[in-house]
Length: 255
Image (spheres, rainbow, N blue to C red):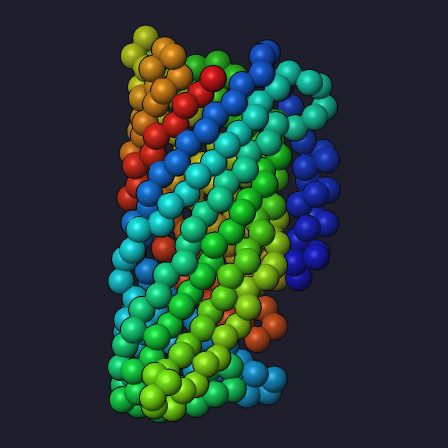
């Protein structure tokens, strides 16, 4: 499925119209995101289905802080897209006592056992985009390639059953990228929104952020917003219907 998505998204990008920036510019920034976690996941093993696990009720996940950094480069060269690179640390772990027997990756974890769960959905994304509007209203559109390099793992106490089972998350998914910004004239304040989204053959991923910010005349700025990430995927032995959502505050420098 991911290969089909890649071909469709790349074809869409090749047909994009564009309006490039008049001058070159670089933006760097970072923020800390504190989302709430909800949803379910399951890890199968061949023909043995895994238990559908609620990441809050079964696995004990609560909110944690995650660091995101980005850099973008815009230029006036015709035909070549601008580029934005984002690194997201989405590694979270939790411990809980199981209230029922569960199956994860072909292993059986029994009720009353203490388990430690790690969900690492850290990723690097490469966004190639064109500026469609570039004045007090800004509009960008393009393609994001999001490369996941993580794991979902369940472990029990070495002094107990000592079970260690994991599912590696190693894939790249293409996403439609759209970003808009409206500057409030003569104030430095702005409102912006960004979305990465794809849906195909029953699988879907969406990542949206809305924020209000301020940028000074010399390029230093900050913004506060709310981000929602959801992923509904059934790939190989991994099934998920997850949602992370919460507030963030970011700082950036545009020069």
